[in-house]
Picture: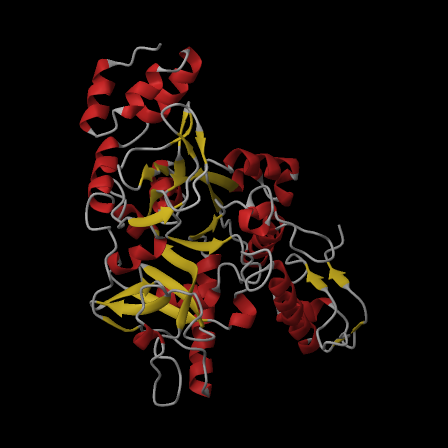
Length: 473
């Protein structure tokens, strides 16, 4: 039996977590030390507060306040709109060239829903070469650095579950040709899962707590705790661009977003796409109590989700794709003294061990997890901007093994986008009996967009079979 430090035991008892004292005492030396270290790393005051609010309180779910349609810059329609969009684009490109932009990839997820064992970024999504999502995004970063002759430091938010594996993967692939010092890893924080009835912290194993990532809102506090925010400021970075690992279509460091961000003197800006239908499971940009916010699809009442304007368009049409431009100053402000983002409650099935050490595999939700959302920083910003981009050019998520948002839908969307690029460059692309183009891959280092592709291929090019366009090594 291992004796527990009396001060720690007193703190745990006061926090309603006295069962952890018994758990530590029941373990032999090394195992007890491992569990005690995890317990000591907990913010017990925060755990007490979260349990009081989200387990013993009213359930922790607050409906949004007064909701109104959000303000967003739509796709340009008129000639004057297009002229303005071109000017804004140039402003965004100027910001990139200035060296004041960093890139932040949210890559803490595992490929569980894809049936893939490993970090989601290691998923081989490309239909011909089997290139991984990490490789694809790294190629975009390399191409952007070359085009704009800017440092564009790249931060990857990992989780405790995949950080070591992700670092090994990058090292094994020589950081995909990038300077290793320009690729920086930041580990997301964790919070314990607690029993939904008692509020007691669950054990994943006799010597390990049941810990979960603290949500994508944990990005900001992770950047602060790691020193990344200070590092950005020291290197002259004023703005960082956040994007998701599972969206291979996205134009990284999107000039339209960065340009509007500058024009509006915004502290946090967002990209949106037009929702396909009221039922589509996407959070929407809205005004909540007069401030810009994202309302989750499950929180938007049906009558608002289905509301339409006089011309038949959805009133709440701006679907968030979790892409933002954020000022370093805002990130510092909302993490001063700890995160100022609200916590959310998620009821989940969490396997755990009981007091006897027996493994329990629940068949119904049994635990509460706590998380924060990055978009909850929007109402804390003094000014915001929201920009619509074409879904077909910037959004096709890979989340599920099949059906919507799957590798198959992303393959189709990428093939269609690359075909548009090729046809704009005067090429001809073969199609199958279903009308879909052959499989295509265009390495971002070969061409980042249609304009660059047109400079790289001869006019009249015929693509009659699956084809990879890549730079000559």
